[in-house]
Image (cartoon, rainbow, N blue to C red; front, side):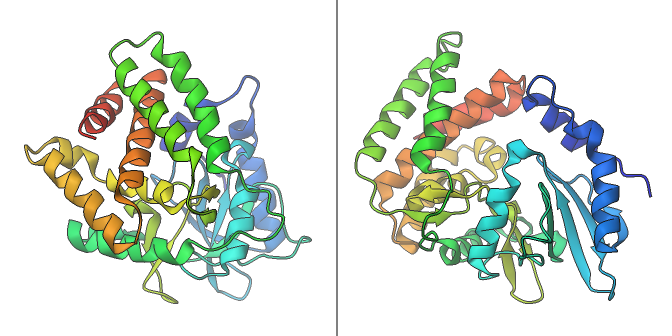
Length: 302
């Protein structure tokens, strides 16, 4: 069958594509080879899908349902593979190919979950509880000699981009300064170094058969748990902004999540601030002005 990338993926990768990148152009041929090599039957491409990979619902030669995921190098698919192998299905989707001879750059064969059933479909309080419980299972010691990026390294790159943007965006400059100061203070004395999901939010937790809820789509990083939890604080940010009680609700979320997962409340607030400002500045840089306004308004509450 002919493979075509969903428009959501095309737009998202177009925002970040380095000069000369031809991954999207090569994607149909890569998908054809990956399917043929594994003797898979393709049911459909998941639409609208994600912003960094092509996801196909497939069946293996024995009829077992599975998911074939293809991602460009800048999405760090080999880091995802290593994290999923380390978790071994505990709290996260199961990696179905683990041998070096089976691996291909940017290609992952995964356990089939229920792609249309995420924690985000639950009422807010229940969604936060289930998401937090899933996240707790992922926070483990990284493997010896790991090559995962650290929180300091990832946020260092982000901080450099934020500083560059602040000079041309006076409206965001005070928030950028506050976020950068928070980062410096947080990195001075991190309480732990754990393997983290890296991009965790409610929509990254899908229903499964083997376990009720399982995380998908990690961009793994090693650092403190508060960094991972920070992205969850701003979930459904558009709903928070739309209500007068948004600031109070956000403060309650921080308190509730910090207490339930035994994370320092001020460290969670600090990383929530940094990650919201970084996302807002990045959204503005690529022309997603509505997203930028929502994120920077949210950050101002912190």
